[in-house]
Image (cartoon, rainbow, N blue to C red):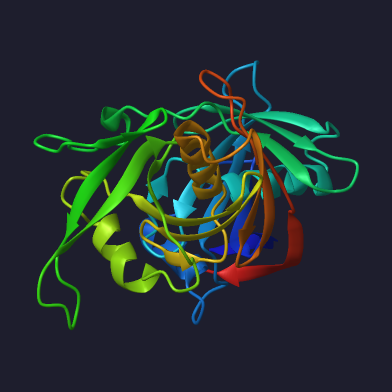
Length: 291
């Protein structure tokens, strides 16, 4: 099978985008992994499928597959920005405001005059069951309007005993565990990220965020993504970190998030409101691959 693709990136989070609006594109898990493979395929954090809408209130269906595992995942905010740039550049719509249906929510995507894209990411859900997170037997510390849960991590290489970190847990359509660190560059992302991701209290795994607060309107962030490892940026992770920080009382309603791949602007007015994310989306190249 010969497949045409577009390689895109948003703040260094990279994607292979496939147009499935003209007919069903049935790729198995091995083919999706081949697309995501950085040595034998195209290489991407996620594979994005653009599909026809199944109902009149949306413009497209938006599906996301992990580039490493080939498994379908719930959401990708940086991918959503690339999605709207893709459908406009490929003549699939002339709208600057596009509504898409994901596996578990509806998103509104808006291309701004400066070329950046704003995504209405929906409201965060702080209920442990939304991830799901098993909180049985744990006594959280309350700060502001959010619980910080003690999470015991098994010893890493060279460590004699387990240690405990505090995380805020929330869903942005996918699961996140956020912890505050003094210096994000020195944070043990490579050591703690996989242990948090696969912790038995997260039945479906979790994205592990490490956030450093610089000011009430600025943070630095690194994210160890579920099934992907550390990526240069994570849109839903930025939204989760800001939502947790706003609830804790550390942050204002508009925050610039510096990731290793670029700058994202996150806005959250508080309880019941949607999180809005604005950032870059760029086409890198196009091509075809035999699968």
